[in-house]
Length: 262
Image (tube, rainbow, N blue to C red):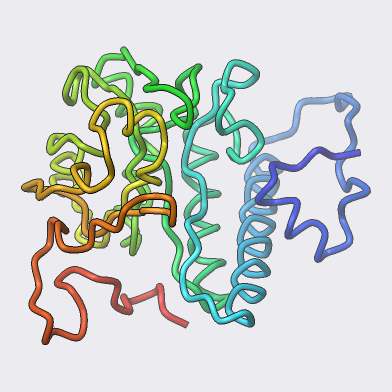
């Protein structure tokens, strides 16, 4: 049986392919370049179809946004937080499939959000329970963990989710969701869409910054909006993007973009 990454399994189920379309046995001869390109193209289509199906199901229920797909490059078994939610361990493959996922969601009628910058798949701890540290050098991160995010930014991704990681090359000892340097990286690389934080009730943030009402403070630059589950005190009046009560929407909120609206 083919074990698809979780996002692609949704598409495989819709296509009746969960019993496995690919042999687990090694081929007698190495595939040529054209065959490899065809295989990647097939995976792109499956990722797009899976996310389109998710988008259609969500849109039918009245949702307009899905915090997906994962653009995290996984470490494999040492990756305790992302696991099978990742498209894999190859940055180029993850980049292609994350972009296919975003486009699939848009085709299904909802906006997507690539997550979790600066790359939760590359650490060995779970930010739900602690603050993971990513000690890699910036050049290594840009070639690996950050490459899929640059790829979707270049394609005009409408939204990126900021995770809770301690990345010393950005700002040591501070969750990336609270670090202006992390937001600056995304903006300097061309992302002009929405940036949303991961959930602010997670231990990586709670243990660092205290109660929720102190966490979502104005950062310049900072997130467009904060993800705050019900168990958090609503921090809406401390948003980093000010707006008056008379405005219909805050500055920087999601708007249709070329190639991303239905």
